Image (cartoon, rainbow, N blue to C red; front, side, top):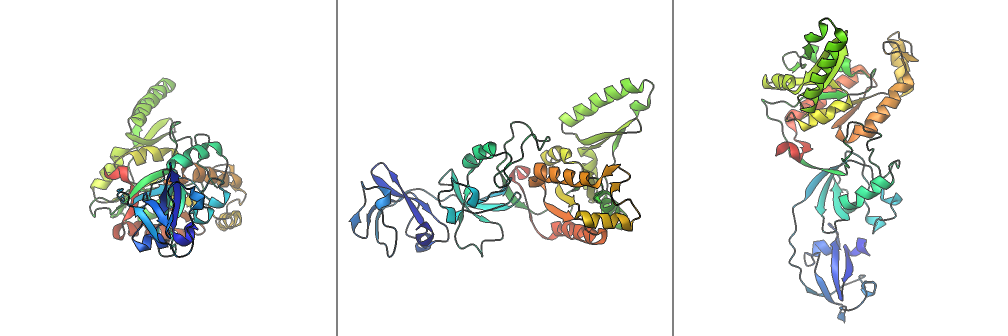
Length: 385
């Protein structure tokens, strides 16, 4: 079998060739076989002109080969933008070699010789995964993701679930590379989460605890909207804001007390240039502009705890445990919003903190930020070009 021998074969016209060498298997360990080798004989029996199913690949094997001149490309590192479970996939060529993964996992692709089925290891599992697993190549994943848009196991949440993505964007994998932030140019921290999950409090606590280390971006205020004819001024201001958004200069914008405010990439860059860490609280719709800039953000999703825990926390703070009073929203809306954020943008999150307790969440947030100084992190290759 492919698992015991670590190799599979296929027919090419009258020839039988090695189609896949499973990394970590017996065939690779021998160092004698390569993908693309033509098999002339197996155990003294001529194989050319025979059907691939007649090739006995069990037990002790002796080959006569014509070596392939194919060279091995270096590994490719990708982040998965969808969940995959081979047990639910009728198309996987060898179910026992199928490798399951979740959205956001880093995969090390060591062979793309078959464009439909790549060989890969999950990051961190190399020691526990003796054989490379099979994952759908982008050509294989893309049409099936479109066919099953509501499946939990093979799914990308496209435009209906992720309005901040363009229609033409079909995301399967994103090529990644390790990046260690320079000591004098800190990555901005973007806190994402539904209202009421504590990201604003965590941000403010960072700013208050170490003002010499953390800072917020100063929002731009358009004072022209305070002039007479507020409606006309607001309309023209929104047009200007829209131009900034389209040009990638504005991360996000909003209106408060008849004034328009916007957080620009320049304001974040100004904080970075001082050597401080810029801390932002953003909506998921702002992530596209932020990630397409040169700022290299580290994105942390602040997730709500269980409903029972959230009610207990609200009761402890003498708040209505059924309603987020300041928002006039039922608690159920928090969880619906969290699900939508994770489904539509979860592949963009670098880390997730479940805010079961403000002190524990703050400690974990600091740990993640401190880790950026000591450990390289996976970032999109496009950021380093």
